[in-house]
Image (cartoon, rainbow, N blue to C red; front, side, top):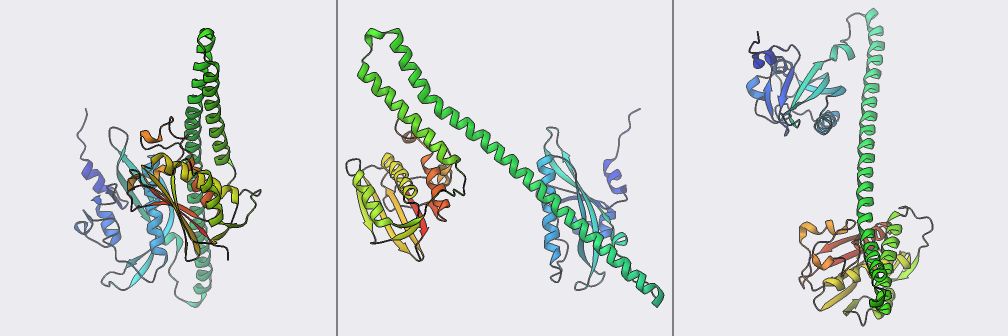
Length: 400
């Protein structure tokens, strides 16, 4: 016959100290064993943030580190939906009756997820054991017992140090595993996005060629060749961009030299004279140590982006700013919302119809520009613009 189980009574009867907390680490339930172990009343614990009831020992630098390890363990439990066993860790507990005197205690903890009907983590079960007696012993009275006790304490301290080192190595392995998984996810997403971008011009080429095969008498050959050449140019540009993004971060073939940014911008601006209304505001002889070809590529990518979004004018401004050169490319278009200003530097991102395939590139130009900036120990970000448009700011160290 099925019996009704009083789970609250079962939880309270667990001999090991344990508590239940919400995802934001608020204590939802605690058994008497946990309260006794902490030297507190249950009412002092319930409804409070996990670390709030316990006084901090400012003389113990390991305490905050132990709290961070506990938080990391709970993050793993939530991500994996599996229990996580922590290596013994040291905490300093206040001595009964004194808020300023602390004693060292060693705890072993197991953190277990409590799942809802959909399999999502809804609560944490935190179970601890006081293992102080196993790791440290009080010094025995008497001269004969003193020396063995010292050796035993040294061995126990060594065990504790080893356990802590193993836990750190375990956490490093977990972090490395997470990082590798994220890399694989980004690689898969990149491959999917690249395939989509390449498929578009290939589909256009196929459509035009098949139409010419079906109706050869209706083909305007010069017009067909112009369209095919345009799609081939697009394919070539995408492939070149993909190759540039795929290059190693530390490109040993890069040749750095002193580059006069002022003259480089003037030279590039002459090629844009008939493409947009371009205004220049440049400090003279701003020199940086860089790969001139890559810096020119960064500038061209920023100008391409600005031209697509400008209503009337694109401006290039170059200044010395402390130990850096600051290059700003501004358009007078609709601008970019603050919430999208980081997203535009991701691969294949277009924010609106102005970034469509008909008018723009593959959505790789800004990602490449930021990579070039990073490779030169610089930065590329978006600032507010007085014209209301987008203002891309590239900062790079000046030549010393």
